[in-house]
Length: 74
Image (cartoon, rainbow, N blue to C red):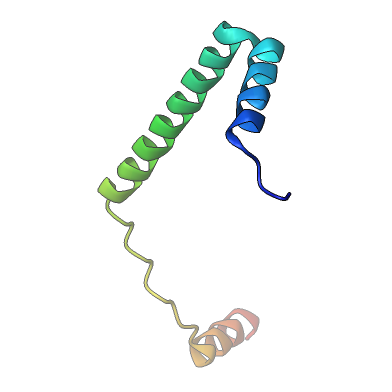
């Protein structure tokens, strides 16, 4: 009772073809294929580009900042 037989799938296929038409369905599949190809190409391009080197971590020297402010003031 819960499974679909081959006749159910054939009826569903016929209804889909009637609603969308053969030409519209093939255009839709073509667009989906183009999207998948573009996605794969984008993933391949991402792998080929070298990673940017990270900027070195800059530490703040608190003492030198305090001395610089003292020389400005005094």
